[in-house]
Image (cartoon, rainbow, N blue to C red; front, side, top):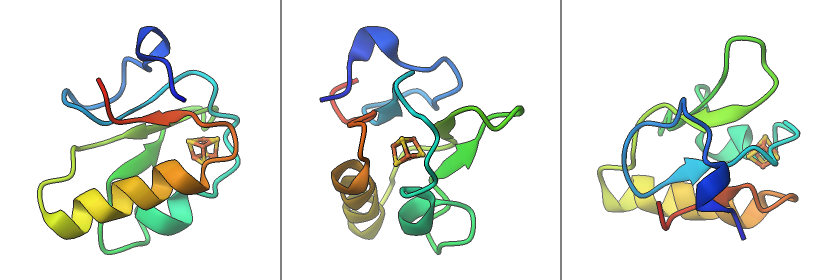
Length: 81
Ligand code: SF4
């Protein structure tokens, strides 16, 4: 379970976030990163973390964010922010 208190500051304001336990392993980027139709997640400038560049706005984007949460091996993605 991601931890709200560890939420990365780069995350767009809203419910979904990545916390600082992101490794970053890239797994979620295949689900909701810049090369997907959803483009929700992005690397930070030094590519040490991933963050939500924007919040999901449609049911399909919500589903992609949920899938990213489920595939994250470190449970760094949360939706209770
Ligand atoms: S799957 Fe989790 S640990 Fe891997 S890059 Fe995404 S948020 Fe970070």
